[in-house]
Structures are given as structure tokens and as C-alpha cells.
Amino acid sequence: PRSVELHVNLREENFRGLQLRDLTGFSERSRVIDVAGQPLRVPSLEDAFIHVCVHWACHWIERAARLNQLVDLDRFMRKYNSALDWPLILRLSNEAHVTRFVYAAVEVVQRAFDSPLPSAEVTAQLQAGCPPRLQRWIDRYALNDVAQLDYRRPDKGTAYVLTNLAAQSIGEKFGIVRYALLPPRPFIMLKYKLKHPWLAIPFYMPYILSRA
Image 1: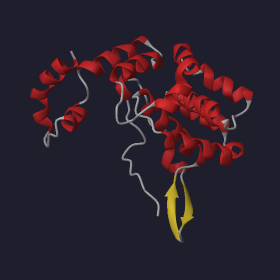
Image 2 (image 1 turned 45 degrees about the vertical axis):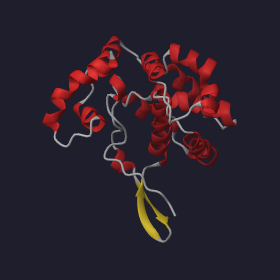
Image 3 (image 1 turned 45 degrees about the horizontal axis):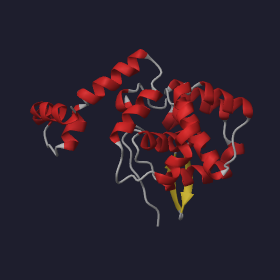
């Protein structure tokens, strides 16, 4: 048996106020593989790698990462590291503004499981796309996070600290503040279990008061 996680989008754009973008050309790079005798269209190796990295890193920032997400990345690196088109990964990550998350995931999985790394040149380019303050957090706390994070009890205060450390511009920092006070309407609908978009409007005030 295999679980299948369905995505309308690869990730949430403007994640927590950060200006993320979707991967361009995703469908064109996809491939068809055989799964239990059935053809299944799946992402390219490069797109799958970026997605797994960002998936873990976003949950890590929200203090809700699971160990199995990092184990997936370790197994992926051990199997496909030499087959990956690293220049393509760098280009796509930069275009989508997720290089910081790819670096975080690659660095943490290497420290936790001694996973293989890309070449020193590629690793340096990934590192250059990660804010130095986030790099310092990884140096000090990443291994403790791997061992101690409990997704059932996320630390929202630390999540805002990490989101701020991941910001790469003044615009993103303003976006973080806006997200904290005025999150997207779908977030309000989900939080308060609302069925119609217009119902979200009166719920912004109790949300802002709860955040305060």
C-alpha cells in the first residue's frame, strides 16, 4: 500500500508572509513511472527533491516537523544524489525563492544522518541563498530540533522568530507582520470552520485579539 498526498499547489505561496513562488515548468518536467503495474505521473527528480526539502523546512519553521520527513530526504539523497541536475535545482530554487529552505534541509539532514551532500561548489551556492541569521540558528539548534520537535505541540512564538530569520528583504519582514495580523482569508475560514468566504470578515477581529 502507498499513501498519496494530493496537492492543488506544490506549496503555499507567500508562506507566513515570505514571498515564495511555485516551480515553473513543473508539468513539462514530470515523468511517468510504473507503480504496481500502473502508470503514474510523478515529478522529475529535481522537482521532487526541492519539494521534499521545502516540505520539511516549512514544517520545521512552524515547529511541526516530523522525523519521517527528514528520513525521506535522507533516503532520496542516498539514492539519487549523483543523478540530480544540480544546476537546474539551483536555478529553480532561486526562481521560487526557496533556496534558503533547500539549504536548511540539506544541511540538517547531513548533520542528522550523515547524508551525502552535493559538490562543495553547489553547497556553497545553496548556502549563499540562505540568510546568515538562519544559518546561525541551524548551527546552534538544528540537531536539537530533529531530536525534540513534537508536531502535536508547536511553539508558535519560535515559529515567528524563525520566519523572521528566514526573511531576505524588508518587504518580506512587512509580509510577516501582515500575516500575523491579517492572515489570508482561507486561513481564517479553516481556523473557524467557516463554509463561505464572506463569513470570514467578522472573524478577523477575534483572531487579532487572540494574537494580541
